[in-house]
Length: 324
Image (cartoon, rainbow, N blue to C red; front, side):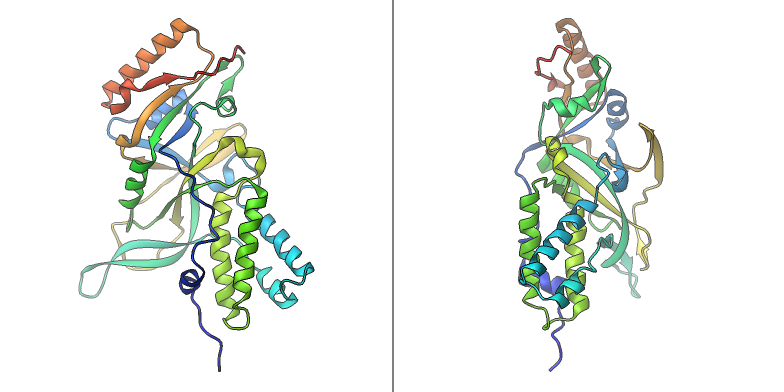
């Protein structure tokens, strides 16, 4: 009797999504940025975010934290004889493949529009948010000498999810994840996955097992981050842009690559357009005197009113009482 054939999808049905980090509950998330960038983002008809390429973000271990944790857990399970050496050798080949399932509209032979799903190698771009509305470590990213030049844009998570749902079939991947920093929780997820998959070793094809594990490492690579960055309390909106779609695709949204220069680093990014109605607030950074504070609030309200943003009456200033 031959080995059973398990596709990655069938494995997920059997094992569920128990090995994915829990999405943290929140009603609002906040995009910290500079004042100049806010003016670029908040356009008249829509938001225009810069989504930065994943390997050019502030954490130099970006993506690789998942591989570090996975490798450590595999080695520990092998030493404890909880998995066989052969299985260890197999799963040690697991890696970040940058593959994602891309949905797009295509023409079939009858010239009818159909939805096609294709596994594509993708480049990932990220827009970063924080769950914290008034965070001194986040403001510190936008300090300049004795002043803070940062602002944050409050985003309705429910409205953002509606935008994501409306972005299907456009020829790119899009997902929202919350970042996991706790190494113990990361290790628990990885260990649980390996132990459960090991039950199928010898029953399923090695290639199916490896593809299944690769799919999780791909996901973990986007939401595992070094504990040093836990103050960011981060949510991420992730765009997976296919390097190439081979099918007969139509109506695919294009994302030209642009570049910006920040603190000695050239950063590739894409411009992403999002419905302006997801915005619910704007918060100005700390270190403002009362007269300056009140004047800036009124100026920001006028700026938002001119662009017809509903959040114009919800402009705030950081309450952090920092002197310098």
